Length: 285
Image 1: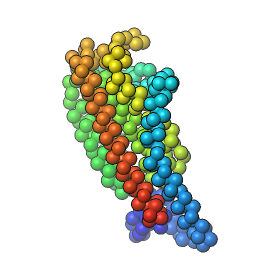
Image 2: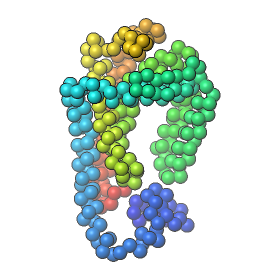
Image 3: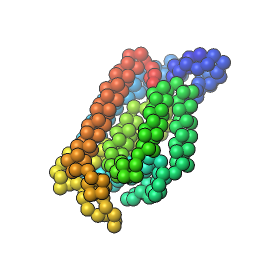
């Protein structure tokens, strides 16, 4: 049966919606006066949501670019949070255990089978949940991540560590983009209900712009050298793993451009969907 609130198709014998959680019996017995007042309120919310989707990401990117100039410490701090998470996630995909910190990510000396088992378990759980809640795009994403893990798991020691070093700023670009895309989550999501998407949008935009600005600016801005007693990622890639400076810069810039393209596509789709549901009169996600 179709949910009267979110239009999700549930099994015929269902007593509550698997997506939004309403109990059908209670929903059907709500006072009629509430149903009469709902359309006007809903229409206002839909118009606001359309405005958020049109202005949200462009304004966040503009403010973040200003922040890079006026408050580089703040944007750099937010960038570092995603930077270290990028190292850790890349290490996990390569089979290494890793714990991200504020300025440093600790990592095991060699790949561990337990990490692979954990990744398989997490991806299997997410995939099952996504299938049960009719989210095929998440099922495809989990399958894709599992394939990436299998490929990364077979990398040589040097290739894996080069990828993990690259995954710092690379992760800041990718994770920053994903955080910005949370602006388009469904109304039933905890991220939407708890207003978390605005914080994620600000953090993602600041981290993305700060990172992209480094790799599209002057070569003097690239942090070569030693920090906290260890080589920086650019120095490791060039001095230890044989990357040229130009190849390294191009790799980061191309990744940033791909992220911007993905953001643009989600931005357009998000606006189209918001306009569509405004015409229909109900927010269907």
